[in-house]
Length: 248
Ligand SMILES: [Fe+2]
Image (cartoon, rainbow, N blue to C red; front, side, top):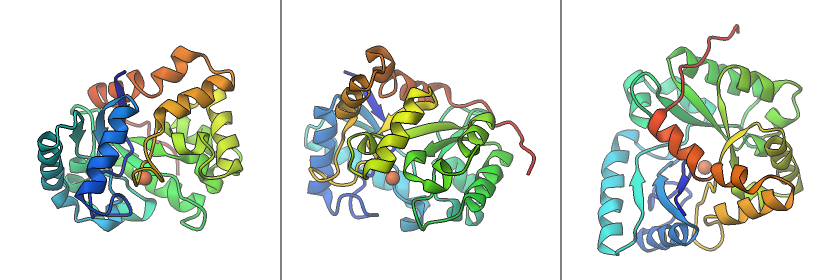
């Protein structure tokens, strides 16, 4: 298995992810057991000095090697809509993935109480205007997105890709996100699944379980597998075409 996680809170003591290095190592071991070989570390931008992320990833990578955990990790970050205004182009590029000219960022869809659709869409437009592609994190957990007619279609029309949380499919966030996630997957709107893991055991890697849930709900096994392996790897290696400019 060669799964790839593009939304995963693995850095220790930074955000609401693992509290310390032993917990981070345990979370990494769980990812390996889930069939994952590569993880982008995506701390919440509001919780970290983004200039420190490369060094923190290097330190954790060394610790993984010392502990003989066979997991490759890379820099990344999870942006919220209200992070965008205070980051300049160089800072954003440091958080982005993909080859030059096809760089993209992980932007989370707002959780309940964390922002209105218009705030989120304005930040998404701003990032596209600055030349980045967008991977939209957990839209199925965002009533602002799922309950607004046409919101998902507007994101897709702008060239954004959608990342579903495996934890939504397993029911960890309740019935609403699970149903919304299955609907998005059935409609073919999802490019990748990620665990959005935070802590060992209680909120760990669930890509294998997510694939099982999709298969139980009528999604072809190869297609479900692609969402956790070939598609996330392609996003890292080939990036995303620059976003189409949308009218405000
Ligand atoms: Fe996250």
